[in-house]
Image 1 (cartoon, protein in one colour):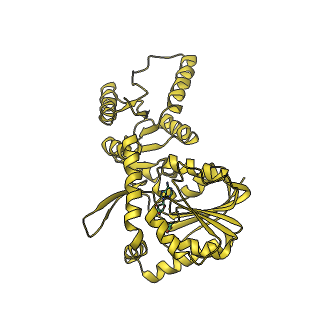
Image 2: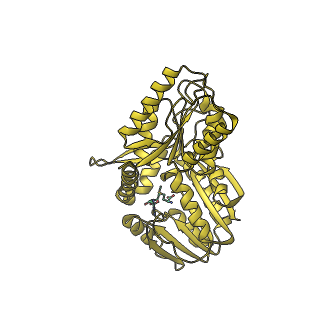
Image 3: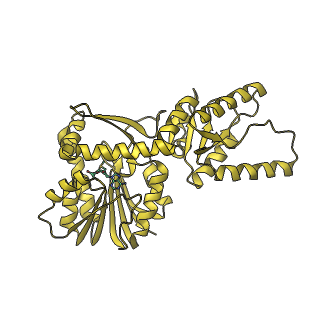
Length: 360
Ligand SMILES: C[S@@+](CC[C@H](N)C(=O)[O-])C[C@H]1O[C@@H](n2cnc3c(N)ncnc32)[C@H](O)[C@@H]1O
């Protein structure tokens, strides 16, 4: 059974027919190798009347809108790419993930491509490897499962794991940065608060001191156990063990929902889905406070998008995690698109961005 419908944005006018055909063949066979299909075939269009052009455009858009993912092949600098950029814009407006292939061009420097693309790579082969790992049903299930297992395995030493990663920077700086986020919690986490993906409950301690009541939501039993211990002296905290992607987080309308370092672990489409779900759990005018990892690259580069990370334990266990490091304004834009007005946002000196937004 075909799993994924891929749309190939063809930026290829003006190239020899044979070259276009063989490039397209390559995409078709790569798609097949992951049990996916290219929904737009590449018959060379005959000379068309203006009406026929419009009909083709409408048919193409219909195909694109029912696709799971747009592959944008921008890898030939002399290709005519306007149509592809138009299709990218269409895909973004429908929350269809875009994977851009830029070859040796400098398209990756273009802010529009950076924002629109979930992943930017050099070759079709890289694009397909990415699609397989992130977007096929089996890839997605493995990804989420491995993430879940990792957080359960690391729960008892989560803080140390963090601090060790930080040794590249400076533990003091890490604490300065964390205090900045605690300040944001003090400013925004008031009233009835829900925190998603609480982990060991580190941030929740600050929230409990600031809010009336807090609901801490977490999928991992081991993480929840750590959080329960840490927060046992607070009377105003409740816990809910569930998968925030699948399960209800209650019918309550919260004053504030806090999501720290969770969105980046999810593929873009699930990020958008979760943000919309959160919106449904906020009272009108309620606040969403998000903090997450940002791209620390000072210059744009290929490889933008979800990064594959291998987490190893001394006893030999290994877990593969995929994580976004949101570049530029990406986090803000995702939040706005889910129906929020950004009220404040900023970045830490090093690794994170934060956004406070109001349900509109
Ligand atoms: C990177 S940790 C961050 C923990 C905490 N927010 C912090 O910043 O220290 C992500 C947490 O989200 C939890 N998580 C991931 N996916 C989840 C899901 N679908 N439902 C509930 N919790 C989830 C993980 O188990 C993990 O504890």
